[in-house]
Length: 326
Image (cartoon, rainbow, N blue to C red; front, side):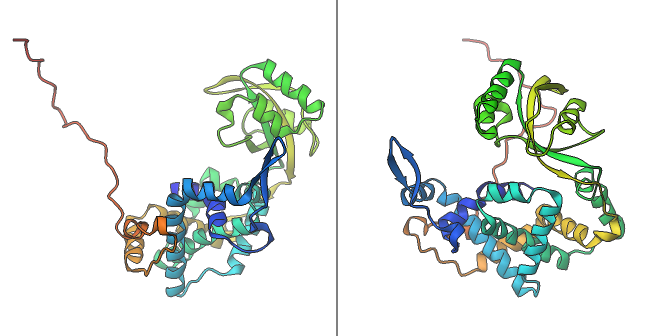
């Protein structure tokens, strides 16, 4: 699943570098000002290109190889399929967050095109028994998408120091944005991927977290509270309720096709045979890179270096005695 994580992290950047058309993807004239002096959108994207283009371009090319492969196999990615993916995200309650992290609706839809291509190919290549699909359905992380009680989605400011939470609470009361307060007052170890956001449900997870969410209205910020969270110990926090969902109970038969697609996607991520076929497709593809500084990437894409392996000690071999000084 590392491939999905990488896509999530840089999908928006890839679209920005490639240009995707439409109002949402237009390069802004100014991205920031410093003492009234503007930093242009063009300069911003030039820097992105210099810094990340070498990583982004091969990923975009691989995405197109997958899309071409799916089309050739008679299972092309369709707008209807992407619409369905967006509806599932809305049902899950994560759509708005993903739109924001991707950089816009079209960027998010583009990101899911590669995942859908893998899903389509996986469904054609693999056969799954009902027991296998049921195993996927019963995975706790998967099951929570389909079966859960009433729950709330919250953003949380966390710290091991209660004084920091008191400062955040006062700053928000004085008009500071919740996300800005999180960036300023939360412990950095909890802000590696931005402000933590999660669903909370009665009877699941820390009791104090649910109690604070249950007592707070949608859009409001809670009072300060604390809870225990191994291995961090006692944490102090405030939260903002950013959404609520009613009880959901989607039985296996209702979502069987969805589960089949998810199982197929996971299989393409772990199956070495699928990866070998993908590498062969890249070797045979007619790839032309128009950016002069990245033309050399064609050979690397078609002939990737073997993965690095950590050296291993020989089994049951003990080091001998140190040589005596002469």
